[in-house]
Length: 109
Image 1: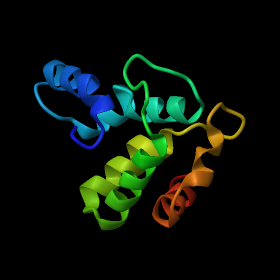
Image 2: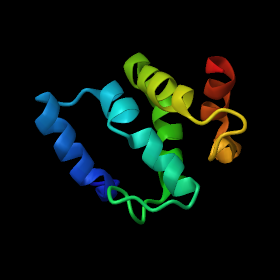
Image 3: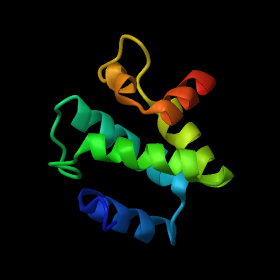
Image 4: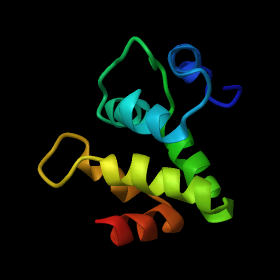
């Protein structure tokens, strides 16, 4: 959590509740995806106040392009696929994707 200390408390709660890291759960159920969209939309959260959503997207872009199949799967299924659909708040976040996440978005949607 060095890179994104805003997720630190959420991460610690996730570890305590699950006995270890479950990446899909951390992103999809415990709220990483929701918090990134909230930050993008200007909504403040107790978990991620001050989160730089652009930095998170940049990190995920690099992880998607350079990552192995497991990392790419977590990003595709538990982040990109769970983003707001057209007409929902935060839907335009995909306009800030790099080429890797943009391709992923086209593939999963």
